[in-house]
Amino acid sequence: MSRDLTSTWPVTFAPAVSDLALRYERSLPITVECVAELLACEVDHARARALAALDFAPPAVSEAITGWRYGLVDSVTGRQTESRDVTHRQVAQIRETCAWFSGLDHARGGGLVRSAVTTYLHDHVAPLLRSSYTDAVGRSLFAVAAEMLQLAGWMAYDLERQGLAQRYYIQALRLAKASGTDSRGFDAFVLVRLSQQALNRDHADEALYLARAAHDDVALSATTPAVRALAYAAEARACARLYEKGDTHAATACRQALLAAERELDTGDPGGEPAWIGYFDPPELAAEVAHSLVVIGDTTAALPHLDAALTGKSTDRARDRLFCQLNLAAAHLKTGDLDAALAVAEQALPTAGTIASTRVRSRFRSFRRSLPAKEPRVVAFNERVHDELAGVA
Image 1 (spheres, helix red, strand yellow):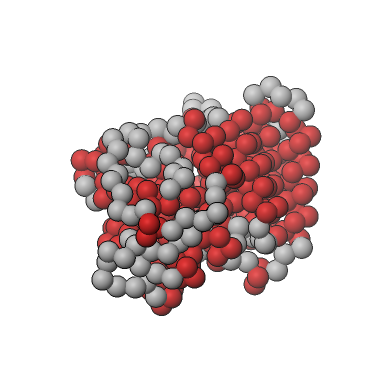
Image 2 (cartoon, one colour; image 1 turned 90 degrees about the vertical axis):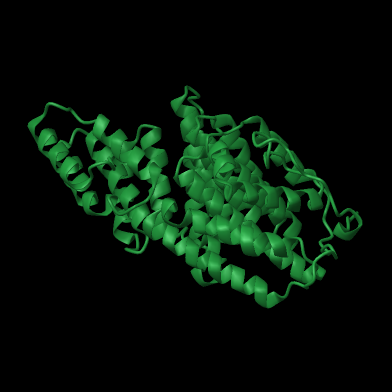
């Protein structure tokens, strides 16, 4: 079965802010209007503040998984109420813009350009979604719109605006579904983002369900080794958290998923991966492996993975390098090596003040709280932090 957008538009869509964009809509026209309304809220300061205050909603996860997995295949012929047809050139311009914004996010954090991303989506992408287009152009448009909505969600997550991030992820998942094969496994990528967020909010079961749903997409679509490795890494993280919460069998499942992730990435060709998964390289996987090993209590085994991750991280991925440094410092602290922990953390100081990321600030504060506050070496470290990062950490 298929559905034609022209036969169901126009639609009326005016939910309360608390309900906005939280549903995985069966109707593609309603999804488009939902995205447009979400973006309209983002450029309205009062409604934007209300959205930013919303928390992650676990019940929406099950609904999104069900709708994505069992929803009908869409026909994406656009509505005929606008004066222009969308072209492949316009879609390519959106993709180039998305890549540029993504690069800035990796280098400087989500807080630097997020408002520019949402304004661009509101001013340039939403009107195209409401325009007319052929099926082929429409699928490409939905694919790139999904990528950019995911980026806006990721930036919100980086700023710890959890409810807002979840809403963008759910709408990105819906548009990725509508894009069909144009997404090349992007559905799985969004599901992993949702899994990561669920874990951040301490919903380990939901995180595992989302990671395994990503495996469904991997199995059902023509995807790539990096996407498959990412899905296994997300499953490993969820299993590690379940072990931490008392499920003793989850440690074995965690290690199995990590081995599967390494095996998948070893078979890949970086040149054959979609641009949006390009960051998931061997150093990134090493960081993922280390994270899960630390959580299941094998910090000693995690240390060489953290060293490899930090050594291999590109300098233009400053936020990722900073997280690697802080995680390595925390791992040294767990093994009782305070000198090594402080040395690594001090190396992170020059970068920390340049990253517009609430997650970075939270991670830095968490590390400092774990230090023995009265130890003279820690006192000296905290004085340097105060001098270099006043108001940041």
